[in-house]
Amino acid sequence: MDINMLRRPRRNRKSAVIRAMVEETRVHTDNLIFPLFLVDGKKQQVEVNSMPGIYRWSADLMLKEIENCMNLGIRAFDIFPAVEDSLKDKRATKSYDKNFFYLKALREIKKQFPEACIMTDIAMDPYSSDGHDGYVEDGKILNDETLSILGQMALAQAETGIDILGPSDMMDGRVGYIREVLDESGFTDVSIMSYTAKYASAFYNPFRDALDSAPKFGDKKTYQMNPANRTEALVEAELDTAEGADFLMVKPALAYLDIISLLKNNSALPIAAYNVSGEYSMIKAAAKNGWLDGQRAMKECLLSIRRAGADVILTYFAKEFAQLSRQ
Ligand code: PBG
Image (cartoon, rainbow, N blue to C red; front, top):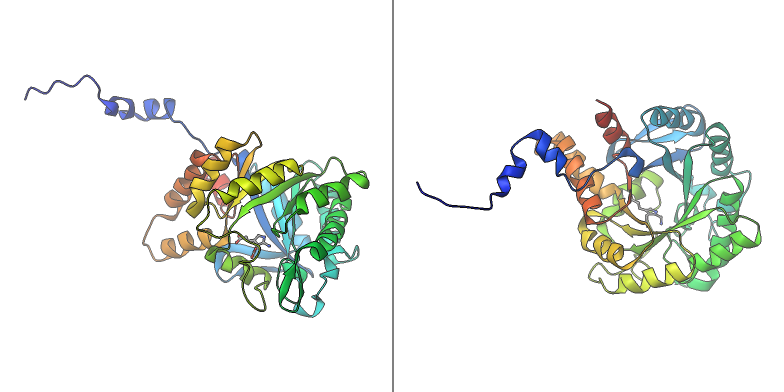
């Protein structure tokens, strides 16, 4: 055989050493934020049905879980409270009640782990009897009426000492509003990671199971973005940047890699991506059935999110990834 080829890309794949040498993208535990679900009470560790390996923790056990994760090198956590239905109301008042369990837990977490980075979520849904991210009147989600509630929530969370607020509600103007409320009260150091391009997605269902936070009527399409839209993400990015966001987030991640890449190429801010509950559950379900290798699929997905341009990934795989990286 007389084949004359000058360029043979396979030469750069011929050994593990060379492959590692020319590897363009890496995922490090430092890039990951681990979302944790919090419940009231003591000694509670209840697995979320649709999310094998993910639990709702009471504060006492969550502190231990955070310690375990810190020992594995995970240093950033996003904490979501699951609230009993009877305590939800139209104005999500528990979200800014200083004595409510989740704010007490956040204070305790920051006290025990001042060096950890603690993030929280700003949106009404876990505390709202309507299950919507905004304030509802006559079946409508009212934007400007919602802002003052979000502001109170932001202040109450900031007062616990947390590091990053994540407005996930998709109301217009909320980043600027929250920034102003924080700054007026002296919380100039609290960061905002805005859910900038958050889509009305089918992939949030397991999360809503975990928090019992599904909307009581309708859907979230009047505030979350249409999955068909790409250019519109630039409008959201421009606004969030002008309003003072420190990070821009894309959510979900895997079906929206093009949006991650778009924002990365059009912004100097760090880009985060939320590898959401449904994306986690799909891999877990397939792996459980023996249909794919769960660990390889996990690594490939996290890698693809980084390759698309995400600096930071919020992922339920964080602990598993950190454990595997340690071996
Ligand atoms: C609250 C919120 C949601 C998620 C993060 N913050 C649910 C929603 O908007 O319906 C989803 C996270 C996930 O699916 O992992 N607004």
